Image 1: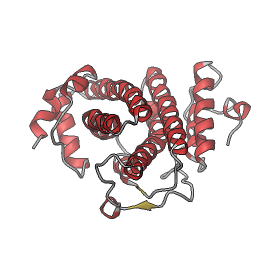
Image 2: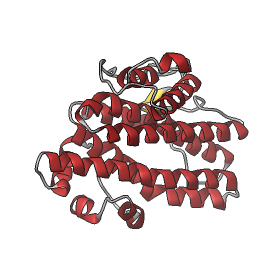
Image 3: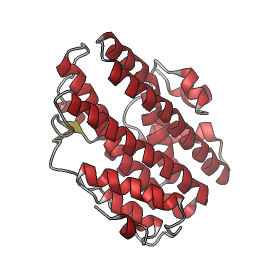
Image 4: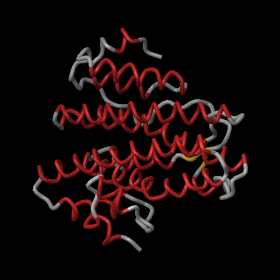
Length: 271
């Protein structure tokens, strides 16, 4: 883990790289927080002087499996089902820390300084989300790493490593937007299982995810306008080219609208 003084002596690109090269979850969490504090305080230089790793460092656990080999979590309210669901969500947030800092370090040089401000905030949120979910897992007798997880999120990052518009189109505007659609039902399931604490945590995370999708949509529109293309049409082309899944209902249209991701983007691809 990089100490605060070490992080603050780095450029923003090197600081992002330091986050990504932390394998230990606790070290990644603390380094991400230190980078966010240092950037906000003006102690980290707006310089892009190193490349991002092809893959972030990962801890020995959880075991990473292809999505097709992931065990079924079940939809019931048993303790085992709730632990598996919380673990899956914690893994998503853990990978999302790297996605935010990779986005900054990989593409920040070609974008305005405000781009870094927005994605530093997202990265700090993802670190907080991981921390509270792992704390909840521990309260339920488990911890991050106790269940297998899949590597689909980083596959999407690798697929879009060469194009900021593609990365924004797929990660915040497809994958995080999907969380807006399914999280309300997940919250309801925890509430029905009398797990009010987990439901409250997910409600907080859902509010933050609206802001993350909003940041993705904002900067995607900026990038599309810069190259003189229709943002909705360009988004649809990029999704067809780079996304291996499907864009399918049900959609949380109100949350998507709040984030600026209106139906003109996704309605034509829905089936």
